[in-house]
Length: 192
Image 1 (cartoon, rainbow, N blue to C red):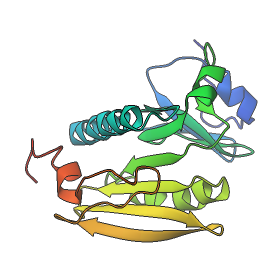
Image 2: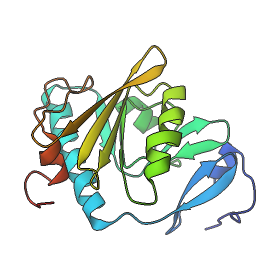
Image 3: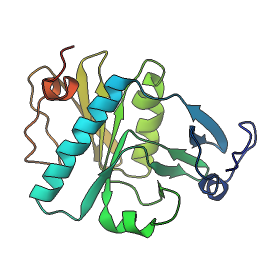
């Protein structure tokens, strides 16, 4: 396994060829950015949402799937690793045996905010995801106890912020029956 030095600038293609590693890197303007491992509460929330989305995908019989920790190309020399991505099954199968970095934009991405990711999640990623026209972007913020759903409208994200027992409204999953509190407490398993 070969990993480029963090100071070396890479093309997107070189980034995709890095190979497996115990570390996760995003590509930002050609530079590798080491990502800290998520906290356990973020893993629980991501797993809960992944299972919720997969059940809903099966229920409505969409040719989609949901992944944790896959890459999404967001620019010429940029790639992000959202906490969750909902993608077409066809685009996933095209990557069979290759690096799991999607060049086709997902239908929906979710970022779960941590103290050191807030600026990226709320600002930089919002801009990058909008520029590649990801239709729906969720920002789950355990510290603020909110779920923000951003919907792409004419090139810009319109946001709705949900707290407590407010029901989440999703274009990708219009029949989803879930509140902000249920997401933040992993279906009521954990209290804040």
